[in-house]
Image 1 (cartoon, helix red, strand yellow):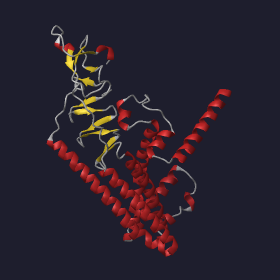
Image 2 (cartoon, one colour; image 1 turned 90 degrees about the horizontal axis):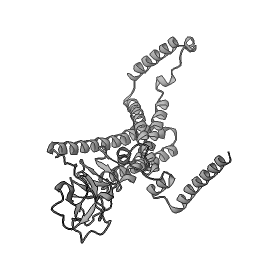
Image 3 (cartoon, one colour; image 1 turned 60 degrees about the vertical axis):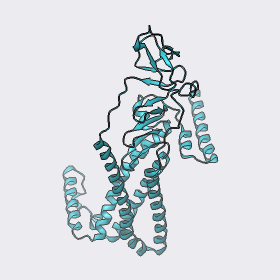
Length: 352
């Protein structure tokens, strides 16, 4: 795709082959180019046309399935969060208050803060618009200025211009500005409008899961679950493969036998610890991936669209600061200290 191949004219010459002339969708001008090209760019408005793009008709069942799936995941995730909060209060806080009343009040306050943070960011991520592209004039030459649609493409699903950093989501049936991905667990796309809420939701989940795991393990130890007090016999202290297998076998037998005598509170504590620990591992991986893309100045869609080694934006902590809209003093302190460290490092490398 080259600009030199685009020639702007008002009226096409009849002697020019039809496959060498077309009309720009952005400004409506007739274009003539020397050779056939399926993808070309208008020299006036800068709009890009791809004549090989064909729309795949969406089946009604496809839209119904995506919509039903997203609503189901939202319902399941919301019920799970409410269950963790309610079951944690029922199973953990009698143990916490039995140790210290002041400690119980402090942990109740922390639980309320983490619960409101997690649920509010989840609701904002789900129901705030992911971000629609700006409305722009197109289609007629007098209304479109020179370069007014620079690098814009035409969305065949929405039937309107799509700016370069916009992607169409077939699940949401709309073009999303700075789209990262479509998340079925929030039933919404992650884009410019709710990306900050989504990352904040992931951070709150990691912190909340760590907090729940800590409290449940403390409560399990406090109620005296026997596997935690298990000690290997003296003849197994010698480390070898046979001794390790015997130890694991005896430990698992002890877990199964002791679980039969656990109370309902004990079962709930064990489930909360295992479920939150598993969720924490998965969410931590996703959070690390999100923060890495933000640091690199790209989104997940850009990561897939371009080569993995290509740089879309300039890497640096300034992307993190701008994304979270940090205060000016904090951004100057953070970015300034990092720049100072990088400059000292580069000087040391030069001296070597």
